[in-house]
Length: 119
Image (cartoon, rainbow, N blue to C red; front, side, top):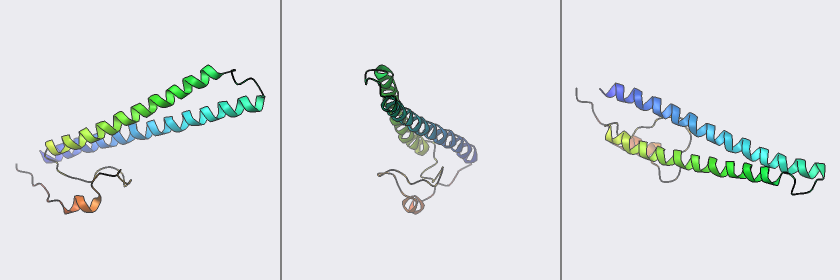
């Protein structure tokens, strides 16, 4: 039934957005940590090699967070395809955030013919 599929899609959208925001928050926190570590070393006037390996590990964590973010972007695109396969067509779901370039905008979505549920 269409309403069940819509409800399921809305649950996925909600959790996807939570995951995307969590990764953004992690990138922000990791970047802040990296900057603080560099500033602290400078304030303490210690040798640049002190804590260098820890700084490298934080840098690696930032890179991994970027990879996770890209994986979620890829999942987002795959879910868009699954949405059409589920017979949901183009629908504006989620927050009012602007979509990345290449995604349909709200005017384009609204101009598409709607799919009628057949019971």
